[in-house]
Length: 289
Image 1 (cartoon, rainbow, N blue to C red):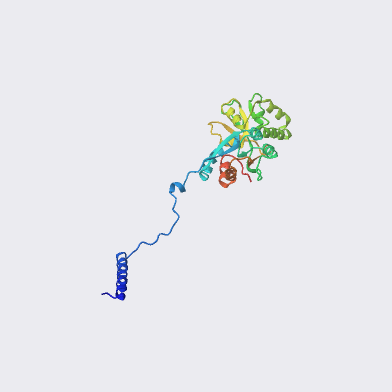
Image 2: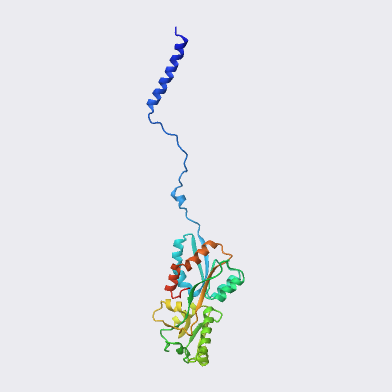
């Protein structure tokens, strides 16, 4: 007969043996897993952003420069899609006053920008000068007239095309003629002869350039940047002398009602950046500062 002490001792030994066997059977037990954040798939990390349109209202003379900037800006801001509205600054400012949706306004005239600012349509930062421009004369390659200096614009019969006086470049043309009237070597007779030769008043500077390009006129007054960047074979140009020239300041600003104000400001910053300024200078504009 087994004594109570022995009966208790045997199960104890049995349990100990089972534990020793289990330990030997699993020398490397699996450690308890510590919860960690599950990494997101690459497709989720690099989700394509929703395109955001930035509507830029810009003076017609900025066409080439801003189009050159577009892919460079969009490379830095892949969510941005630039949509340009190029026209005379007076037309653009009126569109803004009439409620047209825009994010950025780049004008060739402080006067047109001032009108938009007075209507409280700009952000608190307000307009900044980003470029300057002067006047030049472009000449049809097939003109029968020799047009190499301002005095030649007074030749009887010469067809001269200019911008409408409400267009910034048209206003600057008038200022140039006012200076010419006060010049001892030119005078009012020169101005009268030039005005007698004006055959067309265009809605923007690109229209002036286009008419001279196809020789609908012998010469036209445009911005230096337009003459400088023209790619048409044979067309020639000369700059109006500094004493008679007009220096136009180009302001840019974010529109208060912009649907994408952050991206709009980033575009303005790009235009003002060293890279943007280099592109403007390359396209014939003068430095802003």
